[in-house]
Length: 194
Image 1 (cartoon, rainbow, N blue to C red):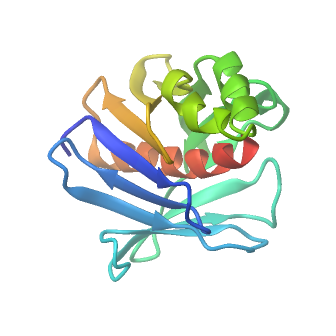
Image 2: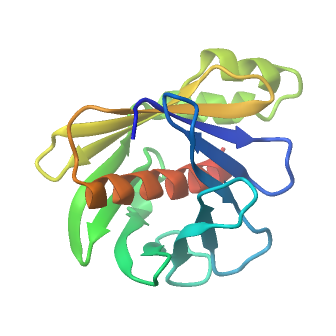
């Protein structure tokens, strides 16, 4: 993949939709979340027409603050999981990326104050259209030994949410997939928080 990657949320759509493109503008992933599901299940496609499913992200339980989301490839193989760190995530978002039962990466919100302001201002008519230009929440991805490997950062945008994903170190394909799918699910979950 050619970094930086761009994530674009269609805000005006009824169901959340995310397009992920690489530095050359090639579509890598397309996600359209289904509405009104008690047990979360998100399908990640290779195309915007949603004809080629690549991955599924499935919750292990009905809507829950600490649900674990299993990352499953098109053949039905579990390739990892992502889980919010319960109470620790109330103020500052924190997620663990798992390979089996082992934590291999941690996703942490860089500055919780920015996220809170972005969420608050996003609820005020007219101001919400402008808040996306000056408030940019960011999420850092760390290996277990605290090496930063990726960064997801909100970018200025009008009538949609845009994020950039930067990679700082080389990753093997499985790690890269685990992180990207975890960031997609985390983005959908954090969008609901504000």
